[in-house]
Length: 334
Image 1 (spheres, rainbow, N blue to C red):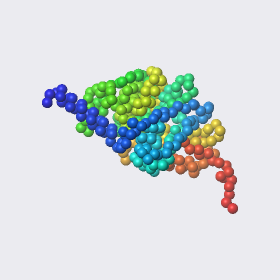
Image 2: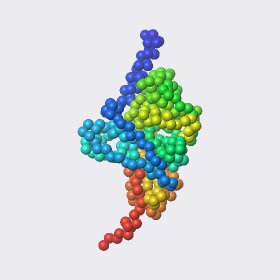
Image 3: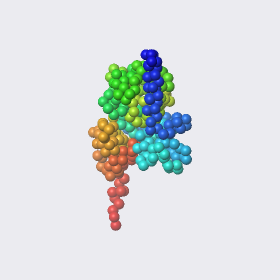
């Protein structure tokens, strides 16, 4: 076989294996892609001192409702976020007639409300359009477990935007794929087989190796599936791409616990599973990192400690009102 034919054969083999690996485990992906409807959320910013935005929705599973991934794509939420908000629901065949909570209510991260803020622990991207007094919230996919595939925290800015990008796999990525018997091409051209999708936003930090980009595999959104970059659904990255400009500030944080003492006096807490460091970790029992500020809020005598402990253990990824109602303390048994 000639060298050119060998290269062509390897290239076709890589595209086939790539598609096959991306399809693995997504039992009803075809229905997801054909029937998804965008519910990307833009919310008005709350009043000064408040962090609570959005409103949860509820979805009744139909007889042919498909998997949780189907529902996640329909409402533009992450797969793991939907799974954590609905413990006990079969992720592949949820029971027809069951009611699924769509987690659209959140506490804004503890970060300046400007540019892009990415919270790795909750697998969400927050974008604050300048002059709009709004926040747009998108589910994301982030880096897998492992040294060079872990998405790092950083404070940086957008350095470049590119439409219809090509993909040049790094040496580490090529080595990792080769160990699986897959020889990556030196450059993957723009098109349907490009895992970066149709739009890419480059970040300045770390020599520009990290990007916010689209994907040709929607079912990885809301999961740890990338080689370190941040993935968005194709419609979401197209919208974000139009809005951001080079120089836009970007903050990537890792904040599994968020709290708020709202202006009306209520106390809220939102807890996500912390990011695993190894395959042996159980994110449901890993120790939680709680900032000094959040410890102060949770330590208030006006917080119901029993409810708070339940929220910290459940880690459902949704804001919960943990305010201690005074009359509970005043009621005495006869």
